[in-house]
Amino acid sequence: MNKTALIYCEGHFGTMDGKTANGLIRSSRKYKIVGVIDSKKAGMDTGEILENKKNGIPIFSNFEQALDSLSEIPNQFIYGMAPSEAFLKLDERNIVLSAMEKGMNIVNPLHEFFTDDEEFVKSSIKNNVEINDVRKPSIKRDLHLFSGRILDIKTPIVAILGTDSAVGKRTTSVILEEALIKQGLNVAFVATGQTGLIQGAKYGVAIDAIPTQFLTGEIEHQVMRAYDEENPDIIIIEGQGALSHPAYISSCGIIRGSRPNAVIVQHPPKRKNLGDFSYMEMPTVKSEIDLIENFSKSKVIAITINHENMSSDEINDYIHIYENDLKIPATDVLVLGCDKLISSIYETFPSLKTKIGVQ
Image 1 (cartoon, rainbow, N blue to C red):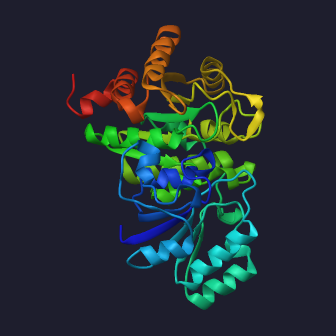
Image 2: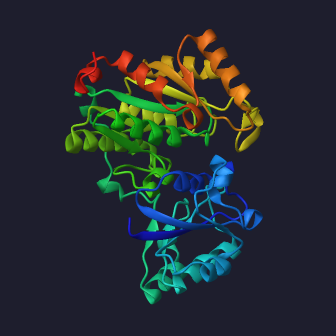
Image 3: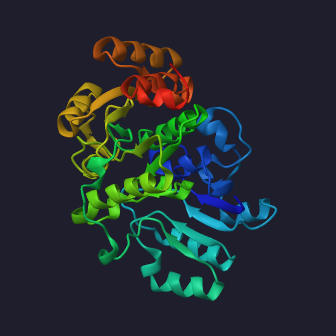
C-alpha cells in the first residue's frame, strides 16, 4: 500500500452521497488515505464521524489547506462522492485540474468519464499523470454474455443484498469476508460497485455502467474468475441498490449473474424513504425478503442492520423484533460483529465446518 490518496468529499463526508469516501476510510487495501476534503467538517477526525473514535485521518477545509498541511503531495486524488446526478460541477473540474497540475493521479468513480474529456486528457498528458475511470466498462467486444458455467459450480455463494442503496451492503460484505478469513476459510469477494473496486477488490465490475445485454454475463465472469483462480471455500457477492427499487436493476443482474445459494439482507430500520427518492417509502424488510426469495429461489439466512439514527437500545429492540417475527438471525456487524452471520452460514453450508475442523 505505497500509494497515498487524498479524497474529495465536499459537504458530504459521513452522508449517503459520501459513501465512496466513507467506504475508503473504513477499508482500503489499495491506497493509504491521508485526508479528506470537506469544509463542513474541517478540523475533525474522519473516525470520529464514522465510528465515534479517532483514526488519525484528518478532514481539511479545501484542496490548498490539505496540501499545505500534509508532509508530501499524495499520489492520488480520489473523487469520493456518488451524487445522483453523477456529473462534475464547474468548481470541481477546477479542483481536478489543480490536482493534476500538482502531479496527482486521478481516481474517478463517476459515470462521467474523464478520459473522454479533452481538457482532462490534455492535462493528464502535460502533467504525466494517469486517470482511472473506475466505472468505465471494457469495449463491447470484450464484454461477456451469460454462459451458464456458474450453474455447475458447488462452491457456496452468498450475496449481501439490501432494501435501498447506500445501506451498508459493501461494508457488511468486507467485514464478513475478513471474519470468515479469520475462521480459516479461503474467501473470494466479488465487488459490484465503484467503491469496492477502489478499495482494492481483486474481482469485480461496476455493473451499473454495463449495457444490460452483458450485465449478467459480466457478473458471472467475475465470479468464475474468482472460482478458477482462487479455488475458494466460499464466495461473497456485494449487492447494489435493492431488488424492489423502482430506479435500479442492479440487484436483478447480480442475482441472475451470480446465482447465490444464500442471501443476507441489509436494512436501515429508521429510514422512512428511499435515499435519493424521498417521495417513495422504504420497503419493509419482510417484503424485500419475500421478493428476493421468490425471484432468486434462494433462502435469506440473516438480516444485518444499518444503525443510522438509532440508539443502542433501538438496535437491540429491532434485532429482537426481526428474530422473533421472521425467525432468522439479525445483527449489526459494525456494533456486534459477524458471529451470528457465520453461524447461519455454517448451518446453511455444513461442509464449510469440516474445512476448518469444526464438528
